[in-house]
Amino acid sequence: MRILTNFIDGAMAAPASGRYVDVEEPATGTVIAKAPDSDDADAARAVAAAEAAFPEWAATKAGERSRILLRIAELIDARADELARAESDDTGKPLSLARSLDIPRASANFRFFATAVLQTRSETHATDRIALNYTLRQPRGVVGLISPWNLPLYLLSWKIAPALATGNTAVAKPSELTPLTASLLADICVEAGLPKGVLNIVHGRGAGAGAALVRHPSVRTISFTGGTATGAAIAGLAAPAFKKLTLEMGGKNPALLFADADFEKSLPELVRASFTNQGQICLCASRILVEAPLYERFVARFVEHAKSLVIGDPLHEATNIGALISSGHREKIERYIALAREEGGTVRCGGGRPPNLPARCRHGYFLQPTVITGLPMSSRVNQEEIFGPVVTIAPFETEEEAVALANDSPYGLAASVWTGNVTRAHRVAARIECGTVWVNCWLIRDLRVPFGGMKQSGVGREGGDEAIRFFTEPKNVCLKL
Ligand code: NAD
Image (cartoon, rainbow, N blue to C red; front, side, top):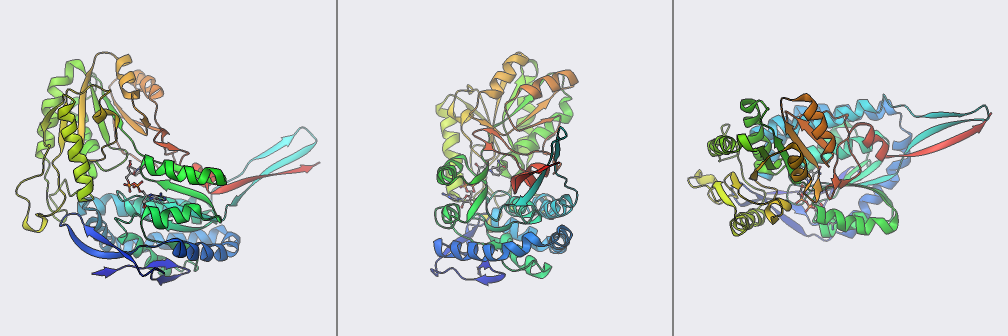
């Protein structure tokens, strides 16, 4: 049994209260670690360490900050197998996915921002012949970074890297459900020579450690990724204190398949978009809209593909679908499947717990990939985020209707459009209310592009220049000529 610690002021630290939360392995239902159940006292210690480290780190040359962050990236790569195994154990995701997606992306995040800060420039504005203005971009101080369980190290490093690269110091709060890789990252930071206090990691529950961090008066900048209800609670605490905030929240992403699309290429990509990471990626497709002439053929082939996915031990190479994050999350998804039936939908495949799991996984939180048809867009199943291996498919007649159905959602994170008509692709992409539209692809990620959502999916953007802007304060200096 691993007993995890916080990482404060460059050292491992037990929680002040002595309390811990159990960390389960979702694939087996067993407790594999205990993580600090931190509270206000731990958050305050971490913020104090970050505050003390800030002046020196902010004054450190960008090239030196970059060198240390590149070293962190190298060490992540060097320990990729260990990190991938920890991520798979902690989340239930296939080890092959942790190895190919999560861990490479974590080191890429560090590498990207370590080099991006060496390439930034700021604006100048000449005011007639009277004055010259130039903009300084200065770090904001101690930033709070709060992340979810679905892509633990991937999303935590997506926040840590730009925050530190731009000269801030940070207190990070990983999800209490998946603390293992954050703990390993603390070791890596020590080995990389990151000065003490620059990054602090406080484990614990949202209502404890998370809220303490958000409330702390010295934390003036908060970057949050997680559920929309949590985002609303954080915004409620942060707004009256005028904290700078980005919120990356839930999604209910449409995929629009037109009859002129390359059917054979689109089909496996849409299966991947729906079920990767057991459907627990904020960007997964959850509402597939299909042009009427293709509808029946598509449903039949999509169901066939979904049934062929291998559900099983995340450690097995052949496994496509691992376990869901927790027993409670599986029950929530099962309630949505029952609701789909009550709302008049037809479950075309899946809908239940898989039989014949390997003995090691008999008590794990597995659920079959589930495809539902026959639901109106107004149904709760089509309106609310399920965040699991459940997808609905509905037909549309015209492009106008497809766009209207896609936009009939409180969320606006991502969408995909599948068509062979390039004019249509641009036209539809421009009209969908969301932060990212993929055309004839899904989850191609360039770290320079703005990333985030509209409506209830988010406020602000991460990635590239957007992240650098978020983690810095622009100051205009006006010099009279
Ligand atoms: P969650 O909102 O329950 O938790 C996210 C984080 O917030 C955790 O670290 C949690 O401990 C913390 N937290 C909870 N309550 C808090 C509070 N009151 N104050 C401060 N911190 C608090 O989300 P989750 O269940 O971990 O993750 C799933 C959700 O995340 C889904 O809705 C998914 O769509 C969303 N998500 C969004 C993106 C994106 O980029 N938009 C990416 C991944 C996941």
